[in-house]
Length: 259
Image (cartoon, rainbow, N blue to C red; front, side):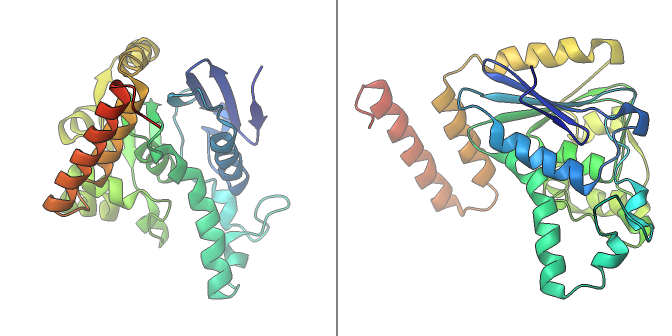
């Protein structure tokens, strides 16, 4: 039975693996503020034994991005339209966007490894949601695109940093400004995709990866993720010190001296 199923998001847990599914295939898993709140809640509901989270979209597309209804005067039922939000005080608008971003940040927690299983379109907010995960396994029909600038906007759902980290500044800039599609071969070559497989083999490839991720000791995996996530922002001496501290914790734990 799902731990959560609302607003286009379903969360199920199988021991150490959680599955978060965007489950509005008729709308190609288009995103809305309600969906973002459900994604945030899914992160909060994860039981402590979960080590790996798999994110996927039902149907032929991972996510076609933001539902354009957000830009209509009416907006969504019970929600302010983005046009209405624009008229609010700057601090209030900032707080609303920060709340939206929470749906995209918890995937980077150091106690989890998160895997996006991506097929079909992953556009705008869909692209940023895939970028929120640690790893991406893609079907050979994948089409990434960052279309925000074409709407007069910017990518604001935490996707800019991981995109630059993965493909470099110049390529990230070109992708975002042109809004062009990035297909499977380029995604794998540039590091957006950890692996590309035929669409019919996507679930099996993800299952194999999950099994491999669950093999090592959890604390060693968590410490390693923490080291790698901070590697680009620490100075070299800081990184060396972080490695020493992490290894000290691991050695004490293996010797039975942990707290």
